Image (cartoon, rainbow, N blue to C red; front, side, top):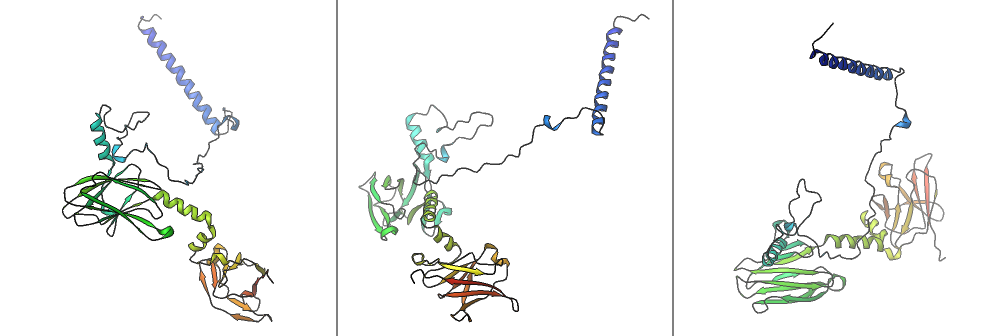
Length: 350
């Protein structure tokens, strides 16, 4: 049969589509057979990639032993919004790269200014969060003294004011020893004045901008130092971890007189003490952490003849705190068949 020329390409395309459909149907049938346990091609475990559960690795945290000054620190007001598509992200100090020097200085100072906030007040003290390079705003008034309180233990190096004629600046100290605290006292001689103040200490530098008003003034300004607080707590734990742990349980033994030479023997119930010690006045019996879920055993002090006498004691967390020393004691539970744990004090000097 003879077909017109335009029909032949159409027939060839239709034939190709039908063959492709057969191949697709054959592939689908092969997959169905493999799912049903047939002879279709099955991916073996050796050909599969194992799915890995990813979790955050613990960071190797190093404690900062000293305060670190960061000269390149950018104030929050100087940061630009992050571009959505720009990569890599570049944080610039200024909105435009062609700022003239005077505008650049004014912009930086304005962005670094930290204003008083009602959220940062503790009674009449404005407690600023300390950040190196910030310009802390201080409001003053004639006839009133504003106290700039530094951190306890921080030594004053120098105080420099821009205007020493119309502003009266002095310093004093409160407390003694480790609790000694420096106070820089500021008083303007007239309203509507403005100057700056730089305080350098043995730990850091403070930059303040002083403003005087007719009536409005700040009674006191201080700072909080989160990093320094963390370091002091870490040093305290390093110096005496036992004291920190005991304080957290609510007991405060005299650490200089601790005596740990006690023997624990007898039965081994779940509540058996893990440690016994005294501070020369009181005895502290430490139980396992799950002690609260078990029955608390009564405590008896035993004499030389083994007779028991009930004594007064208090429970603090997983501790028994006995208000007097003893040579031997017993913890007992039960009537006919008692569970008994005996505690004996050893005196190495005898």
